Length: 258
Length: 221
Image (tube, rainbow over all chains, first blue to last red; front, side):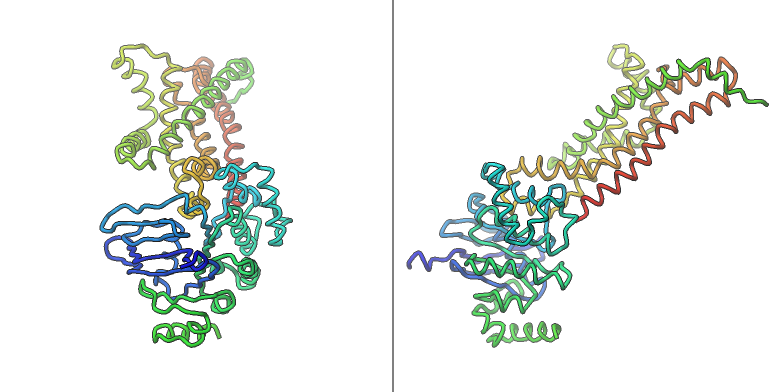
């Protein structure tokens, strides 16, 4: 296997439950190649968001493992064993959440420079320069000194994306980033993500927006009941699904959308 | 009966001195008490059940008993137990600090809790080390959210401080009672003393509303 086709993320036999009775992930296997843009779709409670949270290192797991760029990243031996997370590896992954999670007491530019300055010891002046360039690119130059409460939902989410990019991630995770937005603000956020896709940023996206999924995905995974039901190119999974459960889901979603 | 407020002019200086004592006592106990309250608030969210337990017992005890008894207990009983005489200033400061510590710890606990789990997720996703999470993200938000309630706590303390007159501290209340006894004009004297307390407490309570509105607007996300 050449290094070019070596997986970027490799998830093996991932099990995760909340408490003794709620099993969310029941043995998930996913391999993601560099440059891929994986969109994860599926019914609520099917484990999509949990999957992203695990990859970000926000959740303990019951058993299984995740490797990143060939390095062991997250593992648990199972049955009450501790979840081991390599925080060094975690730093190369960025995540954007449904509810923005900006720091409300900091201005936009302060939100952006906090992590680079505190985590990587970058000089404030240089971090601010990079932050201003990113904001300019995302059409937010005028908002550098505003506070999150003064921004629209779409602006907040673009700031959140910029904040994650300040750390030069090797993988971006987007967890239902447009679900909390008013419909007219969805496009401006999706445009920014599409712009990143154009620069070959590897990403894993959980979304309910099938139009967006179709436009951005290089690969679609349909996740239900804690397992991968179908996995393939968007034309297949969204257009002509092979699995009955995928077809039912796609029919229902597109029916509602009309 | 005829009211004669002019008698108060004779005791102007005494009233000013009394008020100054009240303000000094309040300021000292606000600083000491809210620092104690912050630490206790942190202790009440600590991972260790023992630490949480001790902090809870302290808070519940001081919130569940009258301040006057706490004050008397510290003034009369503590010296018997420790075998050292406490000045009335010292007992007043100790009692009001412990009282303020208990009520502000609740304020801080609530504000620490209100910095939600999502903020923690964001910290982890940005790779912020634990000490940066606390100093740059949690603390500033917790303190900011606590400010309006803390101001209310200060107003309460300012009013409750009148109780120290009961152990002979020459605060505004004590001076007022003395003048009232010596002049036999309780209506005039106690009314004016009440108005002095009100003149300071009222603007503070208005300030609480103002500050609250501003902070809520800023932190609304």
